[in-house]
Length: 497
Image (tube, one colour):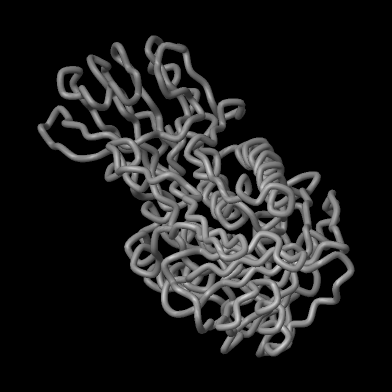
């Protein structure tokens, strides 16, 4: 049996689900398959950063994420009989430009469930129990052999995206090297547990008791996430009784007892990055492209933003945009992954050497300042603005020429491009192609853009083109029509007529 689709997504974790949601809202035919029998059962990744919250806002699932999450609690650093309170990350107030400033604590199984619910609302679904066994690229598309509940079948797709984790079958089939190392001598038990004798108002950490690092983080609901770094050479044992004994030894607290273990895994520091993100019609995203130590809440967020970067580009190329648009995926996302790998590796190393330094988070982890300034898609004719082409487009209040008021994030929300025409800037958007993602124009008089011009640092008539993923494609103050034409030729299908 042979099926056809436009995009085959392999792997239904946060990365694959995000991509499926984005393609579904764009009307792109896709299939999402996963070898597992159901959703991932563990917490593993548990931090959703502010930039990812903005992605989820755009995709329509932010309220669900917030309902199933909480802000991070204070740490309680246990040193002998003393418990030191410690704030891992500073509190951030809601501001006009950053409406979702706090990192949210949510176990991965709930993040996945929120994404699956949104995908179902958009008409999509996950095909569980369906394993990719082979992949052949024919130049004009791929032929994927999968084995599932109905036996073996072939799926022909224009593109395939491997979001299937660190052991990615897509990566292996596409013959893309996964460069880096795994430290087999350093092992950590990660588990979801119920604990008796421990308050839920702190993320409890025992830095070095008994030669082990122990952390118990209260998840929303009743569970704790356990992270227990073993001694060098110690054999990991995931039997519930063994886990309870190790926790008792590492904490030194007689009244602390692990009552139930729901899920557990053995983690080894794995720091790897693919040599390339694309091989022909095959693309990699998330852990299939980069794997991180579990510090800093970076892995899931980086994977989600991989998908968010790739989704609109796939849709545009399927609609007729230049193939070179897909090459920008690696150009933009690989440098981000390399930087994040360094950040999370440094934080993980500090767990053993400088635990208080490891328990401190700054602005970089929030991922609001990640940018694509060096992207081939980015251009501008001025350096006078506060934001630069390639930056995240911040939120701001505005009033347009029709007297309508609102926020930019409300105008950005959806699968379209947005052109901000600020001040006396005659705008002819008629040459923007009618196929592919539409162009929404927001005309804003100079006297009605006070907070917007302050946030963006605009000092005169300016046009700012914002991509569907919320990053600025171009800033033009002079040859505005030429800049828009250039962006259309790069980012969209050709105009007809």
